[in-house]
Amino acid sequence: MDFRLTDEQRDLRAGVRDLLAGRYGREALRASVDAGGALDRGLWRELGEAGFFALRLPEARGGVGLGLPEAVLVFEEAGRVLLPGPLVATHLAAGVVEGAAEGASVVTAFDLGGALVAHLGEADAVLGAPSLPPGEPVPSADPLTPLHRVLSPPAAGAAAAGAAVAHREEGTLLTAALQVGSALRTVELAVRYGGEREQFGQPIGAFQAVKHLCARMLVRAEVARTALYAAAVTADAAEVAGAKLLADGAAVRNARDCLQVHGGMGFTWEADVHLHLKRAWVRAEQWRTAGEAEELLAAELASAAM
Image (cartoon, rainbow, N blue to C red; front, side, top):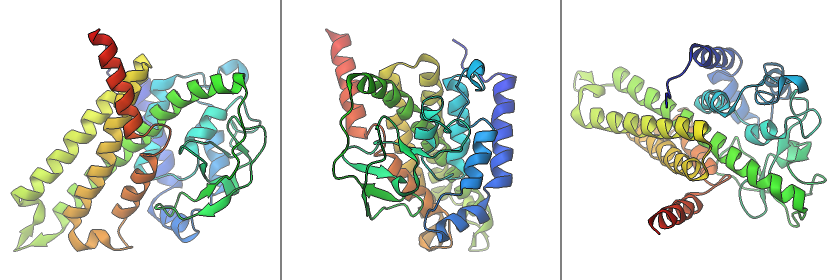
């Protein structure tokens, strides 16, 4: 099986990167932080117009007609820039919830386990729920991911429960893509800072300890990306779980190592590194946690050994 990207896929990735660089650069990221994580509806509609949410919707229904591998590439780019909002849930809601495909609606999901819902305060719908449930705000580790606790989550019918299973696999894979994008970005941040910051008359990147940190970061990110791309092609539940497990580990550990490369500067509010770490923590709890992924993989291994 050939996992190399096609020319069209490379063009898609480059186009999305250019779009986000122009529309959601560092100044926009900082503006989002200052706004307390409030969603930019204008940006949301622009994403819809660019086909971000309708990427996998058939052309006959007004979508782009691409598949999971292409969606993974797009979400990886969104992860690089820490694009906020319930991107995965709105993408999954395209063609199901009115306005989701066009970016006219913001759709969130019960993707954090239990009764926690991200961006509920600004959502127009919750994926799989008959109505928008009330909730109370709770503290969030990530300033760009406001959380609400829903006291009485609505019960899903049989049809909705079946759709939720499919949504969970796709949501897990797309969240893994966001994590991989963040992991790759923190590699870039660490390498750049290592080349700029000088100590003892030379860049700190010349020191072996810093080189080793950056090398481990790169290996983690690339291994996770390889697993992600493979799972996007096979759509196998065990491979999706494995990809999420590797992506979560890469995003969290790379952000921590990036903080170490930055030293004291990395812990200041002015640096962006802490935002990657906080988002990685939240995403690690979305759609499928490490514990759930390990249980699924263990069951698959036990089944194969019988």
